[in-house]
Image (cartoon, rainbow, N blue to C red; front, side, top):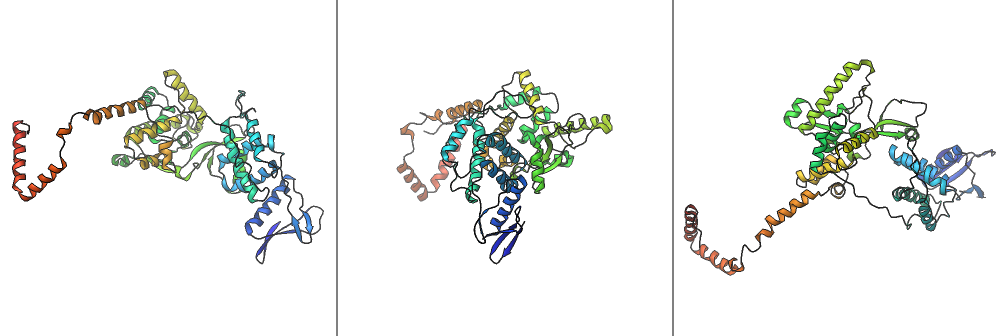
Length: 472
């Protein structure tokens, strides 16, 4: 198969089984020709290729009746591999495999209607959620939140189906989504965060708490932080300019997504950790680029965090000395005794244990990022752009809309400020004591005509202040 130019047109040349001569399809643009070329290659690879029916000499008609399952395979191959990162690729292919193909994979794209989409979403609410490998089956049902993700994927896919002329309309537009109950995220106040830091005596959880609260870092970013990106040299500390750089995160990726994106040179993986059980593994622990470009950022460090980091580094140096060749040096700031990385679930488990043992208000680890952001907004007196630089959000509104939380103590303080700074002034000045505007104009004119009166008034005021006598 190949694409060639003929005048102002582009031709796709390919062979069909049992035919001696190659077939030719002509397109007006190069993009259309390349897309058709990839469609044919994918169909041949999957064993689903059917030659277009010849409708006239020298012309062909592309078969339009394609199932949703086959179309989504093509959508992932042609579109997804060009646009998605490792995490999003894994999520989308998982949704297709677990929730789309089993229920509507055999339906035809062209005949799928808005009513069908509504019925499909309603039906999903009563179906069991997929059980992740290695996790227990709790009997949970598919949630409205998951259906929201499915809808987002299908909306994009059917949009491409319209462009690719598989269907005339996008059936997801106008569909009714089940209501997803928005749960309020519990967030610690400043005092609760201080109490947790004081109670936590064990590394690595302690340094994770420090970095989450001081640097507004995600847990994946903390666990992927390497000493190469930590700059706490003495000269920088003396200048108050010690900092760390965030340009990677720890993540467990599906091996299929890794291979697919590497095949098209679009993988964002920086490093793969060696597999502990290579024969059984379907996923790999990796260091990868953050999910957005804005997440690449520089964060300046408080002295308390610098001290904690130096203690961690000294402790790791001792482990290296004691373990020798048994130590796996991946340059990680947060690592196990042998140098291997900690996974997110392990830190989450340690964090939950800290909460239970100390009877703290239950929160998830990610809420510390919310606590950090709210604290910084307060300390910076609402400097949203400065706080946004630490959180790594692309839009400033995310800082205020999502991560700024009002605590009861702060709201009580505002009420007190309203009393002392506003309501306390009621009744202190009667209407008769107010300055008459007409009188003020006359006084101004008198001073302009006789400037010496101003000097006399000022001298009189100074004399009254010295004697403690009020002007009457």
